[in-house]
Image (cartoon, rainbow, N blue to C red):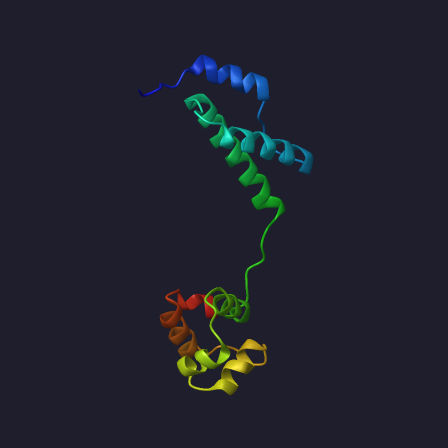
Length: 132
């Protein structure tokens, strides 16, 4: 049985919870708590689903503004990929061609060349721009 969206029920939910642009940590925490409650509710109604989507959008907008993640450096991207895939410097030396060069790159003593970036991109199946 497909349940249809009921505008009156949705209006009641909106009136009950009064969702709005989130401007403070406290409002963000309240929105997260409500979103989690709705997310864990069994047999969520279409109106509750719509409210949940609205809350998630408001939370994401607040967090994108207040919890910006600084862009990674080529060195940090390489280290992250190595850690995520459990790749040792020795294994990466076979890709780059020299353990000494890999250690210098990993330690931040050497930048990644364009050729090395392309080689690493092929190896990790990512865009070469991560390493430049």
